[in-house]
Amino acid sequence: MQDILIDIANMRKDYPTGESWFTALRDITLQFKTGEFAGIVGPSGSGKTTLLNIIGSLDVQTEGEVTVLGKRVRDLTHRQSASLRSRELGFIFQTYNLLPVYRVYENVEFPLLLLTMTEAQRRQAVLDALNWVGLSEKVKSRPAQLSGGECQRVAIARAMVKHPKIVLADEPTANLDTENSHHVLDTMRTINQELGTTFIFSTHDQKVINYLRRIITLVDGKVVSDKANGG
Amino acid sequence: MMWKLAWRNIYGAGLRSIINIFILAFVIIGIIWMEGMYEGWMRIAERQSKEWECAGGRYEMAAYDRFDPFSWDKSHAVIPLSLQPLVQKGDAVPILISTGSIFPQGRMKAVVIKGIPAGQTALKLPTKALADSGEYIPALIGTNMAKSSALNKGDIVTLRWKDVHGAFNAADIVIAEVMQTPVMSVDNDQLWLDLNRLQQMKDLPQQTTFIVLKSGVQAPPNVPGWRFLTVDDMLADLHEIMQTETKQAYITYAILLFLAMIAIFDTQVLAVFRRRKEIGTLTALGMTAQRIILLFTVEGMLYAVLASGAAAILGMPLFIYFGTRGWLLPESFQDFGIAGFKDPVVFEYTLGMVISTLVLVISLTAFVSWIPALRIARLKPTDALRGKLR
Image 1 (cartoon, chains in turn orange, yellow):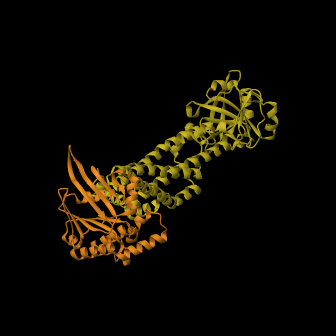
Image 2 (tube, each protein chain N blue to C red):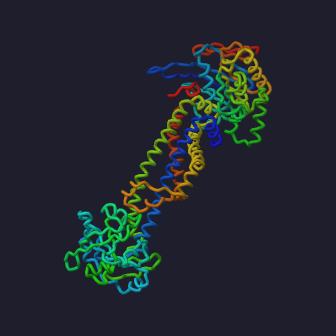
Image 3 (cartoon, rainbow over the protein chains, first blue to last red):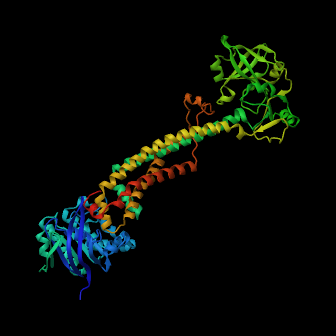
């Protein structure tokens, strides 16, 4: 039986808007298991990114329980949530969020600097990660010298370099053309299959949806469907 | 790790970093340059004061009050027995002091008349010129005195003085020498005569007001009726004036530092605003807010560290030039009444001066880098990732 990595029960998230509150997510009950390749799908403003941020312990729910890798998100201190993100979670963003002054190698190496690893271990891990995404030749390039697809593959390498249990990808193909989108998604699917890493996407891109093995549809902050997909 | 990351960010920031580093380097050079000047000025002023006035310290009559000229007529005595051998050997110089007036070009000018043995060598005063040379009493004055009384070498002027009996007398004196002295207190309003001549004029044979010891001569203890002023006692005024000057310099340092810190502060405020998405990314990658604040603070500190290196490279030729060739202070510095402005002031740099300046600049830079970085702690990661700043 697969382990449950993420357990969300009756979760609600409200945001203050002036003097009133806006409910971004309500009645969310979901579980994610090891090795899933799942997507949270829905139109803009449906709460996809908010859900991903809460799973990533970047934000905290207003009500309900969210447990990630056995840790209750609400109870985590800043230091504990930072530790969870640095060790167990990988993030991939729509706009890549690479550090512009760093070279490709240094961008990928960055998460490892937060862990206790030797220089040699870091080097091997960075080269392996760049090899997975097919960018071994670009180690010395800066993000400005790369195409959008290459930047996103560097972001995938950065997310994967520490072998996280979960990768959270927020609209990873939104800024990419079709060819690059497929390339990036193929890369992620290969990693998922070979390393067993759980991928959770937020997307409304049909190209991504076609790759997913599980589709959770959010509308106005509520889960309206949660079904398996051919992938 | 922080230094490595900070270095990468500073290197990546390009021109903005270069400008900040240059501003800070300029401030460091400016402060060390000024401190070096004051230190050098102090040293030369001390040296010249010792050469021209203090030598190894002096005995003065207990009744003598330098601020009360009326006390001077009572402040004289025969050289005490314990000091006579030193005077005879030339290791101590007796000086008799009196008030008087001269009348150059029909004007009256009050002067301090000082009698000193013409053959003395303890002080740098060119007293050989006071040896009796004929019809007129030879007198020695400094360039400032010459300027203020419009007298030149060879001029004859009438001197009036009061003798010990209260009678006013007058005689013509000749300016035997106009000396170039950097020490104002032996120049301004001072008229130097031969000691024997002044003793005769005052009818005070063997009497003296001061006895100045030659440098390196041990002062005999407890001479009744006399008090001994060490060199430090005699230089107390100089130190006080220099301290006042140094305090004024602190205002300049503060202005320089303030301007530099504004530049750093602005850079850091802008950095927090411009790099908020990066801050969000660093948070997502697992850095705590404290570590990100530390990163920004270290970046600011690194500006100061790099500026220290730049100051060493850019400032070295300047420091070496002024530390070897010196700088002839402008005439206006005479107004301070401190020795040291007539010869080039050779700047003196001490390790303590350099270290304290660097520590001050680096600490202040760290502080003004840390203040704007504190906003990071209030920044929500989700807002930061979206590029929002609340």
